[in-house]
Figure (cartoon, rainbow, N blue to C red):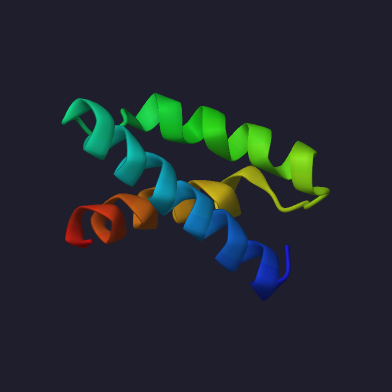
Length: 67
């Protein structure tokens, strides 16, 4: 996965939880973020291994909570 694809996935993983929090007052659970992370590459034609995507999932929660 190139840097542009990583940035797009990270943005996707930050915006989703922000919308969920704004709507329901709760952050998305980790399993929901993982599921989103698995769906995203198939809709965008991006590759990348599971570990690389897992690191982005892990980094997305603190970013969303700071926003």
